[in-house]
Length: 388
Image (spheres, rainbow, N blue to C red):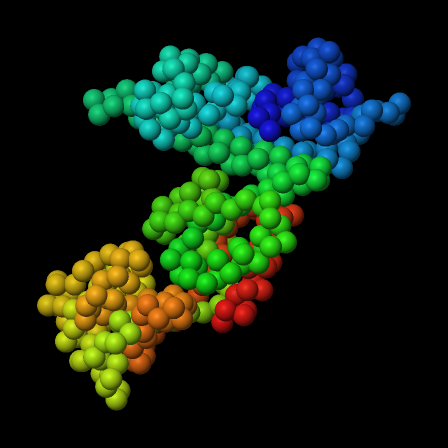
């Protein structure tokens, strides 16, 4: 659904008043304009949203879905627009807000236009019209280039979340009409990619073959930012103690620990018992400082070994480095067991103290998954039990 923001506002008022006349008054448009807008909205949805009766206009089941998502989408926008001129609530369009997001991200009109596949004057005009209706400037030119104001950043963030809600509505309507069941965008930290996530995805696709998955990997901070912006639906992996804020919620699924790994025929594996001192005798492949695994390894490695270690966050690179040398590394137990299962790596028999960490889901506060997304998350919870 590429629904007009103005049409969604009309729909919201119509759902509350059940009257075209009253909706026209509240939105300062003519009655034919309301009727035309609702017809266009239903055409975009591909399903009847309204039931017209002698007592008034009422929502169908599909209309209830759109109304719920519309209320959430507009609440994001209205909160960001609260200090702006009233006109922006009725005059802002989706293309204008899309342009605002792109310029805020790139801080350059030319780059924003290239990103959107539009001409630079078109993007500039869209943001200028948005500024006029808001009664304030969204961008300031400085010696270092274009800088988005706080108001622009807040509105761009609200627009991303609003568009996410509209996309969720489209997915629910498609499922209701017997079409595709929708999609989910997953931020996958390395730990989740070992067995938890692929096993759940395969199980789910066996019963829902049309459901779309998009898996985004990267460092935690990047994935968390994508989650907050509404570009990622759920983040799966090790939980962070400081991550739970007003806009983020975490759910623990199970606890995992850190283990030392080596190639399967490493000489250290032939020893009866391994001491921390013996570990320090070998070269290492380690993650960057500040990560959970690094903090667990730091007491084991002497300063000399730290300086000579290969630093990487790539589990693939770690595996290949270890397989071709006497280097040692560290992984979560879940990852290490997956590597051991295919005989890529072996687990060195030594305990790392205080290395337990919770693994689970991170979502935006108030996020409402679609029915299919909820089914997937429930299956993920079930899989986590068997994985442990």
